[in-house]
Each structure stands twice: as C-alpha cells, then as structure tokens.
Image (cartoon, rainbow, N blue to C red; front, side):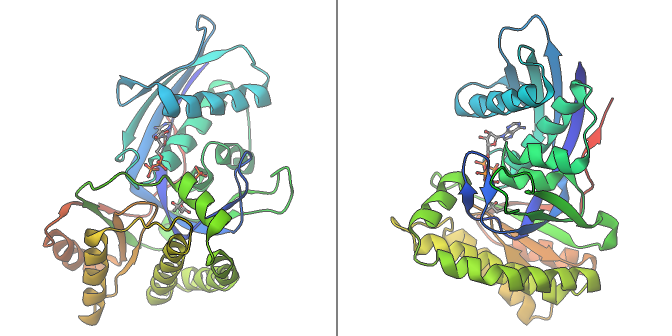
Length: 326
Ligand code: ADP
Ligand code: DP6
C-alpha cells in the first residue's frame, strides 16, 4: 500500500481570493492558473498496519505542529472516503520549491499527497474526483492535478461536489514562461488562508474584486486560445493588482508587498517600455513572478538579476500533470 506521486506548483493568472465555505474550502470566485515545471513536490505515501499514527517527513526532517496537523487532517479525509479508517501512513515528501515562501509549496504538496495516498490505497478515481479531494488540503492545489492552463470552477452546490479544476489547454499548447524573482526574506507574511479570510470579512474593496472576475475570465480564456500574449499578460497583471488592492481595504489593512516587490514591478514596466512584453503576478508574499515569451528569456532574466535584493531567478516552463513513479 505504497505509492509515489509528483505534482507541480501552479501560478494563478486569475487569482483565487476568498472562500464561501472555509471547512470545505469552497471559493467565492473561479480562478485560472498555469502549471509550472520548475517547481514541484514528490511524495511517497506508505499505509502501514504497524503505525499508531501518521508520520510526515518533509525534506528528510520529521514534521510536527501545524504542518503535520494539516497532513493528518487531509489523510483522515482520504481514509474516510476510501474506507480505511484505522490505517496510518508514513509520508515522505520532498519539495523542489521553497516552503511557505509564496511559491505555492502547498499547491504541489497537497496535489502530490492526495495523488499518492489515493494510489497507495489502490483506489481508481477520475481526475475531477481527485481534484475535488485535493481541494480539501489547499484550494489552489486542486489546479495542480492538471498540466498547462487550468480553471478551478467554484461551483454553487453547498456540499462542494461541483467545485474542482478542469483543464483549459495542455502545457504544449503554448510556450509561455515564468521567471520567479526570489527576494531577500523580510518580515513574516500573513498566510494566504488568513489573508483571504480577513479581506472577505472586512475589505471594502472585496465586492469590486468579485465584480471584475467574469470579464477577466472570459477575456483571458480567449487570449489563451489565440495565444495572444499581451492580452493574457495584461489581464493577469491587472487581476493581481486588484487582488492585492483588497488587502489595503481590509481591517486591519495589510499588504504582501515590500519595497523590493515594487522595484521588480517597476523593472517589468520598464521592460515593456523597451518593447519587451513581460507582465508580473504576485501571490500571498513579496516575491514576483514574471511572464514572458521564450525569445525574451535572456533579457528578462538579466533585468531581474541586475536588481540588488533579488537573490535568485528561477525560470520555468509550462508544466505537466501529476505523474506516478510506481
Ligand atoms: P506557500 O507559498 O509555500 O504555498 P503556504 O503558507 O500557503 O506557503 O503553504 C505552506 C504550507 O503548506 C506549509 O507550512 C505546509 O503546511 C504545507 N506544505 C508545504 N509543502 C508540503 C508538502 N510537500 N506536503 C504537505 N504539505 C506541505
Ligand atoms: C494568492 O490555496 O494557499 O496564491 O485554500 O486556504 O489553502 P487555502 O489557500 P491557498 O491560497 C492561494 C491564494 C493565492 C491565489 C491562487 O493561487 O489562486
């Protein structure tokens, strides 16, 4: 009863920002992402009859506390769904992505955990069911079951049965690339979970965020189908700015940006002024991801590496779906 799965992270071009049900992890809006091949998690789950509780190793270190609780809570859902209530697991996971630094380790982490645990139990599930289950670990993770461009349908049902990801276009549809600018660590961030809750509960700008989603989604899907980079990039950038604006309208107000974040944003705007199409997007942290086309890779990477405060630049192509090792 053992299996290994590899899942990539994804970067949202239309952000998931807010829940209508926190326990079931049901979102207030549809989101759309690109799976990235440069960042991934590989997880082996071994259900063993000799264990009295789950054990979780991340990057060869035993994990306790909140991160352990999230994993064991998720495994309880798996055990419940597949009828193995008393069987505990030895989980070994390796992140080829910085953990809890705004690089969506939770997305690849829970997609790999869900896939490996279901496979280890010998269950035969369709991808939409796997995505629905993965969603319970972390919302954005449900998109990482698929490669390429992926939409998470928010669904309308109270039980969440119609809230899961669907593929829009595979990775080989379009060679769009993403450069992740890794910034110097600054103060501790508000987690995405806590940040989105605060904005839903208190932000005066939250309704404005929701009002913009249907148009953004329709336009970006047309842009992806037509491989219209400027259209896709400018919609993604504007959508990211509107998501981050909601945090400024919250009570108490907060922001994920620091001065380095703004410096990278400015550099991307300057690249555009020089005729290089490049667009930024930012998740719940200070680091910036830059979208560009292959012919501009050297110029984009160089411009980012030039900035003091940028520790590293990690380049990524569109990534594929979850894969299994055995
Ligand atoms: P990030 O930007 O890295 O996604 P989050 O704070 O949203 O940051 O999520 C990080 C959390 O995700 C970790 O604290 C841990 O609970 C969980 N996580 C990260 N990697 C894994 C993994 N490989 N397997 C299971 N859970 C993971
Ligand atoms: C800004 O998926 O980490 O990255 O569902 O509470 O685990 P939970 O939140 P999470 O939030 C991701 C927020 C985001 C936008 C996105 O990925 O769509």
